[in-house]
Every structure is written in C-alpha cells, then in structure tokens.
Amino acid sequence: LTSDEKRTILKAAHAATGSGVPLVAGISGMSTAEARTLAREAADLGCDGLMVLPPYVYRGDWHETSAHLEAIIQATPLSCMLYNNPLAYGTDITPVQVHELCRYDNLHAVKESSGDLRRITAIREIVGDRLAIFVGMDDVIVDRGEVDDFHLQAEFRLEGDNNSGIQYRSQRNPDKSKGKFSIIGYQAHIHPA
Image (cartoon, rainbow, N blue to C red; front, side):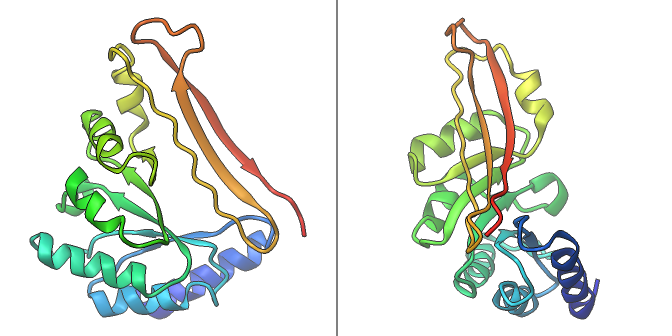
C-alpha cells in the first residue's frame, strides 16, 4: 500500500469504529522515513496505539533495525507494542534487544511470534513487569501446554480520552497442576465517554 492508502484505511477504520473502540495501527514501511511519518500522523488519523514492525523487505543488522524501531517509537506519544515476527519479516528481535528498547516510556508491550515459547520466559526474566507480553502464535501456547512451571500473565491496556481499554490475560490453572494452564481469554472493555 502507498502511504496515502494507509492513511485512508486508518481514517476509514476510525470512522467505522468510532471513538469507543481503540484503534491500533501496524506501522512499517519500505523506509524508516515512511514508517516514522505514519507513526507521527497516527494520532491525528484516530489511532490509539501502534504496533511497531521492522521494515519490509530489507533485513538489516541490529544496529539498523534498532534505529528503525526507535525512530518509529520516538515519532509518537501513542502507546506502542513491538511486534517480533521473524518468520514473516526475516528479522528476529532477541529478548536482550527488546530490553534495549525499554528505555522508551511509550513502549508498553511486545508481541512475540518467533514460535519459541522459551522467548516468553526470557523476555520476562530480562524486562520483569516493564512490558506486557503477547504470544503472537496461539498454537505455541496450546502445543506447549505441558511445560513445567509455566506462568504467563500479560495485560496490555490502551486507554484514551473515552476510558476505553483492551486487555488480554492468560495464566496457569488455579489448581496449580504441574504444567497445566488455561487461557483466561481476551477482554475488551468499552466505556463511552
């Protein structure tokens, strides 16, 4: 899509959902400048948060990738979620690299889609409760349901002037059975102004 087409889609999505439903835009592009510009304009287009992705096509080293991600995060006051999807983008953001990006106050979450459940634990060990962690591949949780001492509790809220919020949680079964857990679910809380 061209930059103008992306803007048109975001405006249409905001018009269709109204101000009662949080709008999170996926931000990436062929260049850092393109992605940064869209991130800068996102609030005026009706977005409440951003999902920040590596650049399309180009697969840089960490120095280049971090410069790209940082430029997007710094371009907006909106809440940001980092999206690590190495299978789709060919760029893998390690737990240590996620931690490096925690210096930005508006980075609130990471969506980890590498397919490796150990990443969730590694990110949590490094960043503590600093970021909410999402698993981007539902089958990873289901496939790894027998992992000993598994515990994941993520909560990510987007809050705007209208007090709307989106929240996701999952946790171990209350009976603390070894290696058993359940997905508590996805909750959307919409509170009109």
